[in-house]
Structures are given as C-alpha cells and as structure tokens.
Image (cartoon, rainbow, N blue to C red; front, side, top):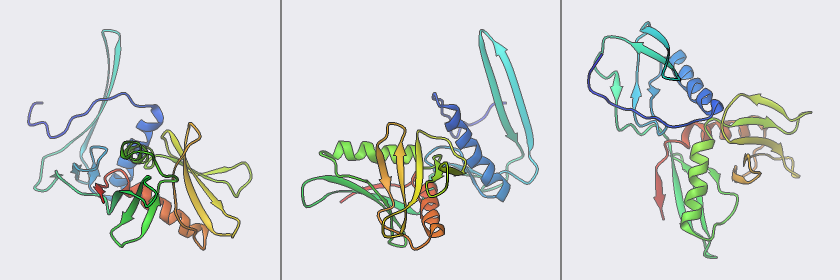
Length: 215
C-alpha cells in the first residue's frame, strides 16, 4: 500500500515505554476517542468501530519485525494534525533568587505540578521539564501509605509517581526518576488521597503535549 505519509517515527524505546504507549492507544480506542499517534499528541486518528486489524510478524536478515496495523476506508475528519491535546502549559521562569524553575499550569489556572528545585541555568530547567514530559505519562504510581509500597496503577517509564501523606496529613505526590532524583511534585497538599490522584492523573494526561512558555 502506498500513499501520503502523515506521520512516521522510529527510535529505540524500552519495553516499558512501548507498553505505556500501547496502553494509551488502547485506552483511547476502547472509549472511541481520537487516538494520539505521536508522543506530543499533535496528530490524532479516529478509527471506525470495526476496522480491519492486521498483525504481521517477519524475520529477515537477522532482524525480527512485528507490525500492528488498523486499516479502514477514510471518512472526513478521521485524521487531525496540529492538534493541541493538552489542557495545560509549562511556564519556564527565573525566580527572585536567580534560579530557573518551571511549573505546569492547567487552563483553569491551577498549578498542577512544579519542579522540586531551582536550577542554575535555563538549560538545566528545560532538561528537567523535558524529563517530566517524557516520563510522567507512563510512570508507575506507588502508594507509599500502604504496606510494601503497593503499585496501584500500571505504567512504564524511567520514573515513578509516589503518592504519600505528609506530616500535616495532607496528600501529595512526587515523581522520582530511576536515578533517585525528584523531578516533579504536586506543589500543594490535598485533603484526600482521591484528590491527589486526580491531580496526578491530570499531569499524566497533559504533560506530554503541553507547550512551553518562557516568562
């Protein structure tokens, strides 16, 4: 089959990262929502209720290729490009002490995440922000208030969300990279675990495609 290529990407990715991407696709498919094709969620596709599903496994030249394809007759508006899927914006700014910081602001005005520290340079702050963009959507969520730090949601990235109660009995979360660094936190305490989880899910949903604005 030949035609116009709307989007194409190829990069090494961990199995956990691939699983996270496929879960995101599966979730949208099951709900009948537009499915984000790219990681920035700027290209979406809306398959019909029963497309043809093709699985192709090939072995040639010492390589194995597994391809999953959905095929259907196109209708108008099946494919959207230049989509702004996120309902939040990263703000990159310099604080009063000369440190660079970022915060993720929802369209409702709430700050739903911020960096856990100030950075010496804008470049370092941008790197921290990019790490959150990359890792937040697929990160495991661990409830540290339960025995054995129970995993309450599946995921797959190089970071983990830790859900916990602080000394004031407020619920918070922090996003901890596999190297032990806290790359983001809730920035506020919530009255209930449920509210903290809702804030966390908003970050998972909106971080990847959020534009960055410098103040």
